[in-house]
Length: 211
Image (cartoon, rainbow, N blue to C red; front, side, top):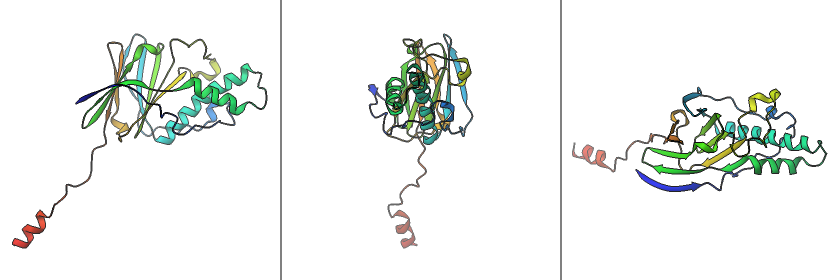
């Protein structure tokens, strides 16, 4: 296993989620149902973490939903003035979505991602794992007051920030695990097992020829 230094993925905006024209109700931005059961792990200092295996389309939908909720807040603060949909969306995306800064340890069969858990406010931390993308949803300690939470949108509470890590190799989302360790959030990403048969290199043909 080899250790890699702090990594900040600046490619997190590989494709913009684009403004949802109905962000007055953020929950209408399509979020794909997860295909695997949600797995919870032990809590730490009032924080809990759960891993959700998800398709790439499902991850994009979750990001759009979080951005849409912030865009709604911005629009509400501006009195829902017309003509600012794109502007509000871009501002919301800049405030909510950011690259994941983490330490990486690479092995032949897995990747270990370590990030500071104390930057998240007490409550639920959700990790969405796709084949080539890792997304962490949580509430930031330093600006939790800025992202107001309302009772009628309780299902969106705790999704104040979205940290994204794009992966250069394919992982198995169904086997991703996460845990807290000494104030850090450790996420293990098993790589996809190779299903290719080993090359023959002509050995079989030589044996047949001798027969």
